[in-house]
Length: 77
Image 1 (tube, one colour):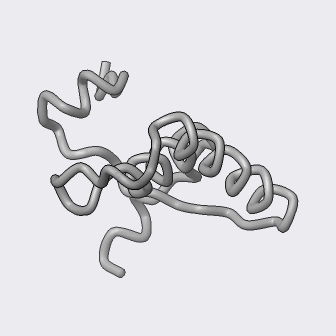
Image 2: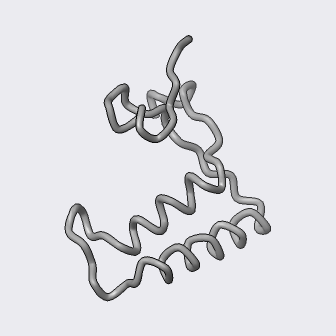
């Protein structure tokens, strides 16, 4: 991958958020067969299992758009 040097470890919260989102949406369309609370519970349990199993999940830096700023990305200061 060309962006290997930009990868950082993903936090447990990042992974849980991504999994919960995947359980609630298919692309941009809301999936109504997965309740929001259940998706959060499942995502957190999956993250706990991945951590106990020794998985390390890496992520690329966020694109410098408004969405990244809303999620707490501070950029270069």
